[in-house]
Image 1 (tube, rainbow, N blue to C red):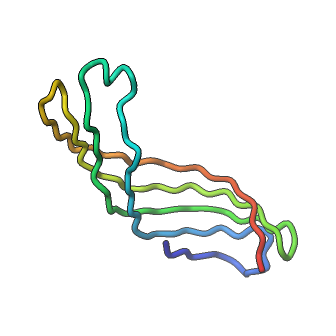
Image 2: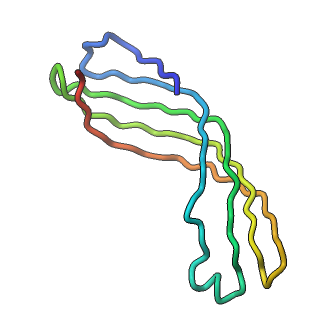
Length: 108
């Protein structure tokens, strides 16, 4: 993710934007008990490659410590494969999450 920070590195509030590419891999995918009872099995999801973007704000508490808030968007497209009653199924699925994060950081 390439990021562009606005303002001086010593500014108390420092907004930024970012853009890049995300790679998503799915693991431990399984149907819940209701899905299994309905005859669903053999769940697998293909890996995904897509665009990602973010906006955020760093707040400098002092020279070393900061608080951060950011919002990320990721473009995730995958093929979902499974069996329904023993018959192979393939569903093209789009997951485009918005992720909200709050964190603390230490600069060194």
